[in-house]
Structures are given as C-alpha cells and as structure tokens.
Length: 59
Image: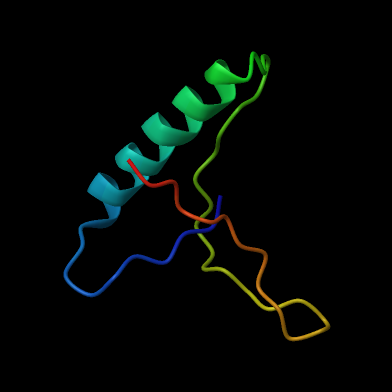
C-alpha cells in the first residue's frame, strides 16, 4: 500500500493503524491469503490524473 499521512502523523503509527483496520475488514468478509505490504513510494496519479483511493471507514 502506498500511503500519505497527514502533517504531524507518524508514518509507523499510520501504517500499523491501516494494516490493522484493513486486516479486520478483510477478515470480516472472510477474505483469506492476502498480504498487505507497505510501499516505500508515495501514492501517484494514474494516466487520467486520478488517485486510486480507499474511502475511510467510519467507526
């Protein structure tokens, strides 16, 4: 996953939180055999000037 955190947010904390929430979401849908990897590169725009986004879940 390519992540961009808000100013002042710790990258390690953001990654742990995203990984935990995504793992919980996938498990809730009984999705197995998925490996979540942290990318070193930041998000980038596609040819159509769009980012691929994941919409945050509300608690």
